[in-house]
Length: 110
Image (cartoon, rainbow, N blue to C red; front, side, top):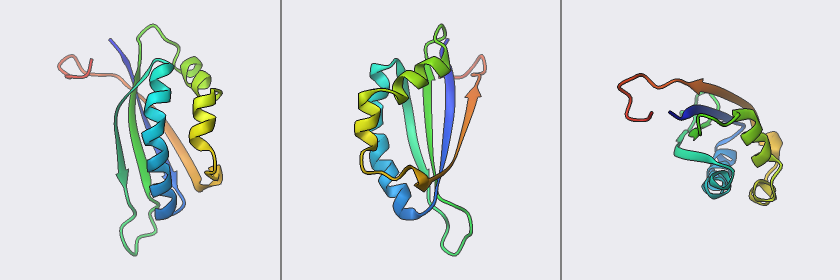
């Protein structure tokens, strides 16, 4: 059984969300090289006139025997990650929430 993680990134603006969405399309290949599988990436733009910030959601998984933090840190220190992030101001990410998800016995993603 795999270990799943939902990653939620809060961005400072719609422009930052669009830029980070493009970066995530590059992350998918780099993550795979570090044994992290991307199952989906979604965006939630801020509603017009809302004070809510735009968000990007990514569902990823790790092998059940892998240490999640070790795999993630290996990717974050990789040349692939640094190349993907080149030119992006990290201060545009105003929050990151990581949730480990446990699939139910009947879940198609197990």
